[in-house]
Length: 182
Length: 450
Image 1 (cartoon, one colour):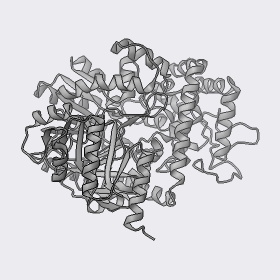
Image 2 (cartoon, chains in turn brown, red):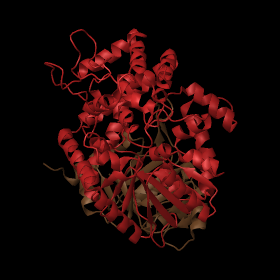
Image 3 (cartoon, one colour):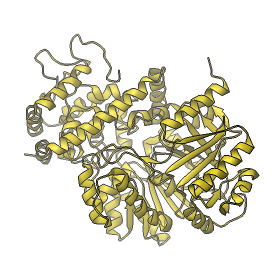
């Protein structure tokens, strides 16, 4: 029997802990905005880049606390984006789909910034409000847009190349925070 | 003594090497067993995965044509390389055309196979390895010793000494601190590289996607920041359509690193206008003996391999001697066959099928159920008699040199259900023997993954 959306979300959330990612439970958008501001201040993440389709409440939340270095919703050259992303403390991105059984975020690359925002800054905040939740990869692949580059992200970057000891944070983000429903 | 025998003996007398490799391999196998046990439909998924691979090999030329058409229609370029020389030549020509001198490389077994590192160095092109394990072995000036964990043979103390001396920071053997130092060093290169080079785990004919599976993010960096991206992979890595990736990706990470999914799995298409990513993207599909193997009914099955490394991690011989003893880019059970397929097989590669107890654990653990012992026997049988002695002798010495090793090998052999009545694993010394598990009398079915 297939799982309900709530059960799938619960499974997705459980996976994040195992993956060394942090799931931030939000009651509603106001709560999410409050929590986002609190994290930016507490962590001193004062420089931000945004991927495409990030909602306006995120821009509003960042405004007073952090400098918005690049926004995929605006036209910016590749060079400027690269410079901004490598300087930014955090990248914030929208998530199109989730895969519950592996705890995976699916973020296709649509416009300039969509590859860099989730990869280059040392911290990544992924918003999953409105994301379609699938139980397995097979469900997602059945409908995937064949013309896009699809990025599947499962936890922060990691390696076990030294004596098989897990180290989180290699070339991609050291921290992955997921803002989603309670 | 042959070079293989010398290398085996050297490895056997190096006990820190033996314990580092054994520890790492056992850890990987245990993690693999845990996540495989979660799958209620493991055998069904395995069957599907094999069907996907079999379909690809049976229809390879039309899948390559379709992939080429789709990848090129999206703005990329597909090249076919007949052999090592041809493949390196294409890379060098692409770099020359753009005057690209500084690059960043992600992990690619095919790049190792074709000797790309040496070719780039010879041409005066500076290409730094960015996978942490590959970076470590590049700095040490040695080849990787495992297909998915290149620095597996090195202790953290030896890595600490190496990195602190080469990157000039105070000695530490803390893996987190060492990783941070390497990250800082490589980050500068990522941001200024003229080109990125990486391998691909699959290419999808119907959609024109390259598939890259990795954990560190260096693979993603390579197809995001540099203006030119070159992907090198074997012609056999085709799959038909996107849904075919599902069983493959479900089993690859689980078999390889014991993860449910790798941190980053990317389905890559040539960069579209207005997107970030390389303006120029190329794929080099390397033959280098693969078509010949596909035409060989006895070795064709090896082309189903997805290079997960599970057969290395479980192999009693690999676990004792480590990857360098094989004197080949591809070590372990799959490597003993693969080394006789790609490039120009040598007298040494002909000896590699002897570095096996034929216990059958490799076949049991393989996500595609490839019958590795059958092909090891086939390759043993193809050799002129007499070429066998030296390595068989080395193998014997290896067995007896340590009670722990003998015990480990025995355990694995028992798990695979093929220990012979005299206590010796079948095929141990037989050279061209035939006593691997399917031939062993009255053995219980006890798969290694349970």
